[in-house]
Amino acid sequence: METVVSGIRPTGNLHLGNYFGAVRNFLKMQENYNCFFFIADYHSLTTHPTPEDLHENVKQVLAEYLASGLDPEKSTLYIQSDLPEVAELNLLLSMNAYLGELERTTSFKEKARKQPENVNAGLLTYPVLMAADIIIHQASKVPVGKDQEQNLEMTRKFAGRFNRMYKVNYFTIPQPFNFGDNLIKIPGLDGTGKMGKSEGNGIYLADDPKAIRKKVMRAVTDSGPTEPNSEMSEPVRNLFTLLEVVSTPDTVEFFRDKYNSCEIRYGDLKKQLAEDIIKFTAPIRERINEIKADEAYLGKVVKMGKEKAHESASKTIKEVREIIGIKPFF
Ligand code: TYM
Image (cartoon, rainbow, N blue to C red):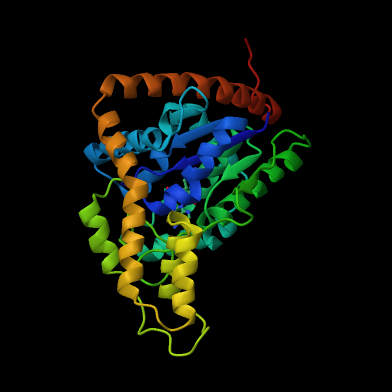
C-alpha cells in the first residue's frame, strides 16, 4: 500500500484553504492509503508563539482534524514533536542542503520580508525539516495545496541527493497530490492571493455564522461587468472559486450566467456564498467543541498516533544511520 504524509502548522484555527487544500484529500486518502497526518508544531516555532498559545493551538488543530472526519484508527494522527527521529533526520539532511538553494526559495524570501525582525535559521531550513517529515515514513504521495509545491520540490531534491550521494536507492521520491488534476489554491476574501493565517483574510472552520456572514459581505469585489461575457477581475474570480468548493454546480452556474449577462448583484452572490459556507462548516464547528471538551479522548488519540508513527520513523532512522556510516560499536 502506498504511503501518504501531510502536515499542518498549528498557528491558529484551520481555515477553508487548509480544509480544501489538504484535509479534504486526507479524508479520501485515509480509506485507501497508509496515511500519516501530523501537526507541525516544530515548524510553527519559527514565529515564536508563547508556550500557552502553542499548546492551545496544537489541541485546537487536533480537535479540528478529528471533527473534520480524520479517523485515528484508519490513519496515523500524531504531533510532530512526538517524533524525535524527525529532528535527527532534519539534522542529517541539513548537511547536504545548500545555503544558496535555501535562500532562493520563495517561502523563505516571503517570510523574511514579513518578519524582518526575526529571520531565524529555522525559517531558512524550513524545507529541510519538511523533507524529514515526509521521507521519514517513505511517503510516495503528499496531499498539499499549491502553496506548498516548491517545498515539496525541495523534498524531492534532498531525497534524490541523499540517494545519489550514498549510491543507494533508499528514499522514495514523493509526488504532490490532489484528487482533482491540479493542486488547488483557495483565495482569500481580500481580492488577491491565497487564503492564509497571517494574511487575515480567512474563514475558519470554527467561525460562527455571524462571523462568516460579516467576513463574506465585506469581501472585495469590483464595480460589476459592463459587457456580456467579459473576463472576471481577480476579486470576483476568487468569490467564484469559493462558491465552486462549497455550493452546488447549479448555484455556480446560476451566478455565472448572471455575471455573463451583466445582471449580477454581488450582494446576492455573497449572501448565497455565506449561507453555503455556513451549511458546510456548522456541523464541523459543533463537533470541534465537543471533541475539545474531551481531554481523555484527545490524550488517547495522541498516544496511539505517537506509537504508530514511532514504529515507522525508528526503522528509517536506523537504516539511514547505517547508510551514512554511523555504526554501533557494541
Ligand atoms: P500550512 O500549515 O500553511 O497549511 C496546511 C495545509 O493547507 C494547505 N493550504 C492551502 N491550500 C490551498 N489554498 C490555500 N489558500 C491554502 N492554505 C494552506 C497547505 O498547502 C497545506 O497542505 N509547510 C506546511 C506544513 C508541513 C507539511 C509537512 C505539509 C510541514 N511538514 C510535510 C506536508 C508535508 C505548511 O506550512 O502548511
